[in-house]
Image (tube, rainbow over all chains, first blue to last red; front, side, top):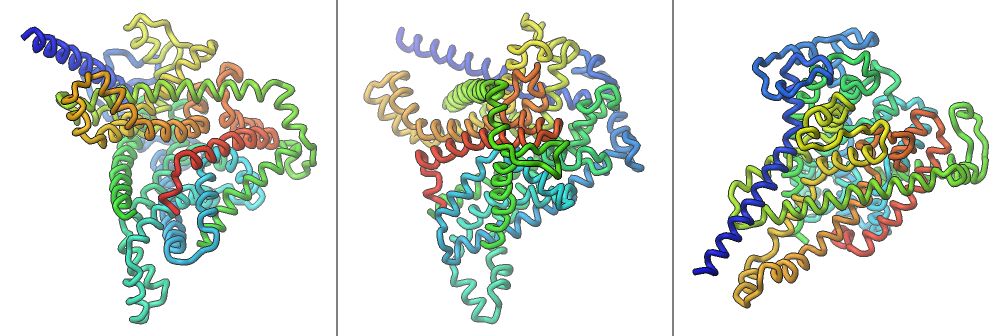
Length: 296
Length: 281
């Protein structure tokens, strides 16, 4: 009996500590996100005026969202700035997603179906490249693109694409490996060209990887700040959503930035959908990996 | 195949070679079109004025200082969640991965406001509640490191928790049952079954995360900007600022090259010891 009592006491202590740690960590995890969501529904003008009572607001106001969506902050843009920034980011992200899919699928197909020389050393080389720090490529790309008049959205898309495509090409290769070549051969006997067979059969059967590549390319471009700021930061009529948030957060000029609750509203409007996309991409990635693990 | 090779060559290899080339010139805002070869001048300047030493030490403080707490917290939470008699797992799990899921760039903008001295939320409410001293990253170097490491812990612990949790889940429960029948205590089960099973995951995560943290740009760039002075500058942040804030392109390239050499060596080690490419080719 004494032993059983001791076991139960230990178990109670263990679970109590576990719950205490989990509750503290969960509260800490939620705190900044909760803070910014709540701030977006208040009239808080600056950081100084955020008070502890704002964390339990009595009045909810959508004023910050109204100002965010209709406010004109910069003299260089004639229309409300925030929607323009988002439109710019969407353009960049969509173009990057499309180009990444094309590049990754073609390369994945070639890696899987065609006999390429030095496949292994190419793979090794491409893998090593993913270890490059962004400045190792950002500085020379900036200098190169400055001379080619590519310090614009075209240049940004060209710079974003390989990052996603290189990674996705390998996922594509693995998933194309799983598609029997007989399908395309049969289609080619029926009169399709290799490219048509690729489009109608391989692309369709590898659709999960196509979707994942598009999503990764989209998010990579949408969430980039470092390259966009280096390329177009000086021209405020070309700002993207992330540069816009940087400005709203008071990083460029704290004194001239709009009210803090507007920044909060922008963070929520951008953060929540991107968080949802991230969770979707994680699920797709797990599924892709577990699907591929079965093949190997 | 060909388009990928062309893209890789043009957008990775060419820049890298061009960066090496620029690092041997005096290219900056005054010599943008007419720059000349200056040999090892930039590298010598880096050593002579102490930048190399400072940046190396800072980057190591940043990398290990972030990585060790992140991995320990992640492991602890994974072990806690892995207890069979714990309830409400999925609720805690969903809340704990929020910092990872919320876009890191936006989180950092929010954290910057929260750390503001003396008006930010942390300094006005949270730290005084726990009787902790305020954090002033503008003047105090230890405070700046504390701010960076705590924020980076918030951003990254969920990743380690998720990875370690799934590794723990893949250990067959029969192992534990057999050990219990054989009379192994909780400590013996942990050190003989749990730790050895995690070893491979642990080393893989450590090396890849080491490179990732070494190259992690946004936390330092946004929170302290490398300050006070250059005391929290890492290679990547300093190179970016030298290039795009001060237009010292040649010096920025030289710093990048040093950092790249280190990360490439680490990347090679990862491949050699983890066999990550075996499944791919």
